[in-house]
Length: 174
Image (cartoon, rainbow, N blue to C red; front, side, top):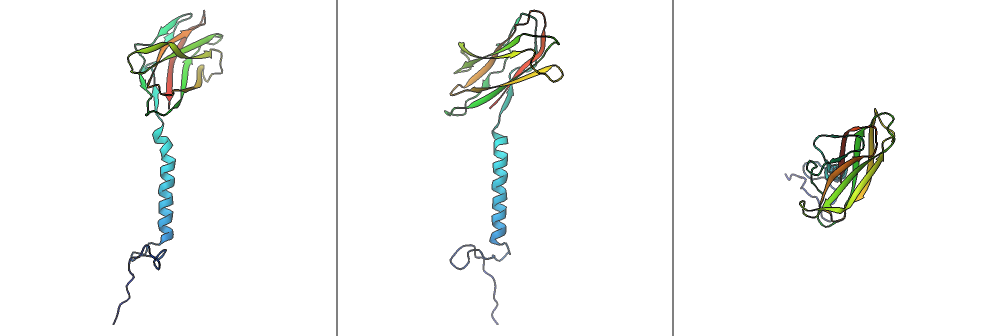
């Protein structure tokens, strides 16, 4: 008496699309592969986004004063090879009610993380009367960091002659 056993056939002229000896069909395998690819595509952007805060603790800036942050700011390494990168910087601070001036956040760039370009800085100027959530002002600015390996927050300048600002900080996402 001859037994007819299913042979594990996955590909070939006669076996394409047929079940193998374990009963796993081609349609089920395609579903699993599609699910794995979709999961990878969903998680890839989440894994590639980096976010770093420039100051380990927020600083306060008195009226008509400038807070030098070059010694306390983190050097953020931006380089991901030779390709151009776009980044966004979000600045935050707590304002005093009635404040009507600007707060300037100035950033410097470096090619080696040691020598900083003081002539070509990037500035985000925020009106202190910008809409706020519980007096916390947030503003985001886009910046192209094409082939610039390092950035740091160099200073925060309060242009208000009467009111102080508190909890000043900046975060970069790239």
